[in-house]
Length: 269
Length: 161
Ligand SMILES: Cc1cc2nc3c(=O)[nH]c(=O)nc-3n(C[C@H](O)[C@H](O)[C@H](O)COP(=O)(O)OP(=O)(O)OC[C@H]3O[C@@H](n4cnc5c(N)ncnc54)[C@H](O)[C@@H]3O)c2cc1C
Ligand code: FES
Ligand code: FES
Image (cartoon, rainbow over all chains, first blue to last red):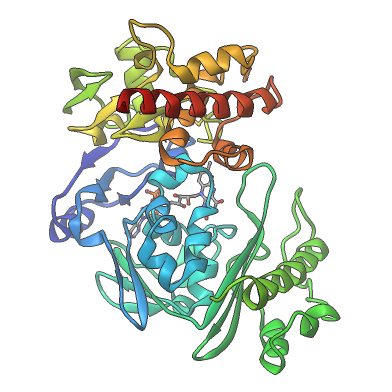
């Protein structure tokens, strides 16, 4: 690993100053993506600003309308939060299915969505629930935030502070794990929300996207049958050593049906 | 940069480079080579230790970030009285062959036992997603963790009497 300057600010204000004070400065949350990338010299920051000391990015708050999760919340803390489970159990499932226990003990919500890995789980939950990303500068919808392959709308020196997830009537996440990496080969997050049915897909494309044809079919009739004869189009989906586009498209259909079945038969939300 | 932390019950002062990993601090500087390093990709779990009571991959934690933390590695698991019940269970159930993965397995298993009052083979298998073993086929590791967790709760009951 190349060396760098390490700073651990105590306040958000100080962190923003540290980030803008030197070119090629990077924030670090759990380090579960950044440290492996630095080991391989895929990332070579001159200065690392450790967000671990910032109270402002912590905590989970729940009200009738939404669950607001601080950017520094670990996957473990979201997976095991009784507050989150009571409001949006599907969010606990998403967090509890990321990587392995040791990754969940350190990896965070903010780090995951800032990285926007095309196979990451959280982006599907954010887009599926029409969540808002709160940053040090503004509030962005999930659709505005996730721009493309490992790319987000975040500007230089802009930090995610929290994510606000509106409470849906019901939601479920189904993930088909890559047997090697445990990332989503394909993951489908389905939700019945105030704004209609939303179905977000991760793993299958260059970034998270909404499955419009599936949403339309479910809008007509929210049932597994509504999707049985539907063939999800494979145009533009990934082809790699693990799966080709046709197979990814097939998985989108299978996982969407499983998610709908879970919503209808296994328990509310 | 100067840090002070507690490692296996002892207070440690060290001047570390920002890029120094916890696994390097343990192995190279403190001579605690029970913690193994098996990959570059944070996937194998041979390096698992506890930081402030939770299992983490020490190859993916910067030492410099651990000011004031408490670290426990495999060396502190056995006591003067002998092997820990979890270690004994690995021994008795033939839960290892070459042993390379074992320190990480045991540290991960201890965190599992602490967090799962109701152990099951299925939840152990899920828990081990971040611990690779290239020898045993996992069968005996799962058996060992179930036996070790049972022995630990027996011992806790005994002590509670
Ligand atoms: C073995 C392994 C398996 C994994 N499996 C999965 C999986 O199945 N599914 C999945 O979704 N993920 C998986 N991950 C990734 C994991 O979820 C990471 O924790 C996550 O992607 C990054 O979170 P972090 O807190 O560790 O961020 P870091 O590694 O600290 O940072 C990641 C990026 O985000 C930036 N960043 C961090 N915090 C902020 C903030 N508040 N504001 C702005 N930018 C910020 C950093 O600068 C960096 O660019 C896996 C990781 C490993 C090592
Ligand atoms: S050496 Fe740490 S996960 Fe492989
Ligand atoms: S015993 Fe050899 S790797 Fe597990």
